[in-house]
Length: 539
Image (tube, rainbow, N blue to C red):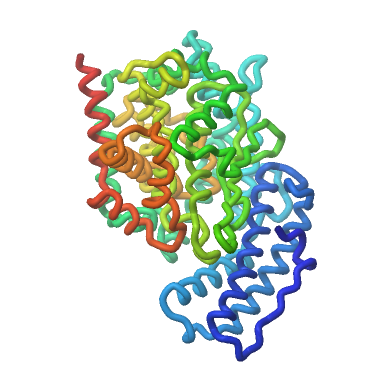
């Protein structure tokens, strides 16, 4: 593994060298540049000054910049007309990635929450970075009486707290989180200002929401009807009495109330390891590393990233050294499912075996998010719970908790789609209407409680990936069950790798998914699951 750009000698092939040899040399340089990028990304998001090999963040950034510039220079020496097929795609991919890195910007070194007077004067990129930093600080320090929780811990407590007054107090303890994002919902609030910027940019360059849909073969005009169909299925399957938002979390948390006492913090990693080992994907054996301890200024959003680019050896291909970053102060079913989801990403990228130019996340974020949930959602199956935890929740309670979080994601996706289509709308009113109509939550337009997801700031439009990803997860899980049976089969990881995981950008996600499912993607599998909940509700 390279330690510094200056320690490696890249000898340019002679200009008369065959085009294939010259491309291979550039691709090796691209691979090493991406290695440094991934290391710097993980180190910074983990709020560490040095990576696992002892290299400083500044050193990693400088080395990555030097190699990127060198790789771009070498790319310019190649004649695109000399390449066809995958080689031409690889060349274009490398040029695109390296050029984006050269244009990246940050908060300008200032991390303080933007003042009201600053919001209008900051560029969209700097404003987003400042707001995200402010959000992260608030999300990691949720004060409830004498207790200090984080955002996920507070939401988990809503499911298990027996006292209704205490549940309300916990929920309102999250106010600083949503105020960090949307202020007091004034028209010039940080988020509403960002929404105006982004909507204008998307009109000119295209929307990531539309791109997410097209990556799965779905036309943008078809998306809202699909979202509403899933939300309608939930609406019909659950009691139609309006409840306060804190009570909604509690009503959908019966599985957590029963099982979370069996999942202490110290057992999260053990349960995670045994779950994936049972399907032939031991995270330990695959070289997955974890950073799960609380730490100031750590990323407020859990994520998984490559630790490096897979390398072809004489008889094998090295792994991607997946790295999972999350923060857990408590155990519980919700935190376990999130860890299983992130490890679902990790085993996916560990299976990618392709050339360096294509060794990256697939071309469809909803495909990627859905695949991560394929093994994670097994935690809501009673047979898995009995085997792993020695007890199980009812089928009805498992379905409500499983799809409660999914339906919130679908509601957020619908919210973003509507807000970016018309950013002059009042987001509090829009969120209140969506959650009242579909989730049976009492409206509170005086609160911006929708503003509790970091993705709304850092990755606008990303909630659509979770919503469409729910369709991917449900459809793939149904196909896996029909084709191979148990998720506890140790051959499952090999089968999933061969069918779904291994391609990176070598093949389009749309082609991979349609070949596996045998039909176009739609919301039917989610709606069929929710029909079971409706039957149990009527019993």
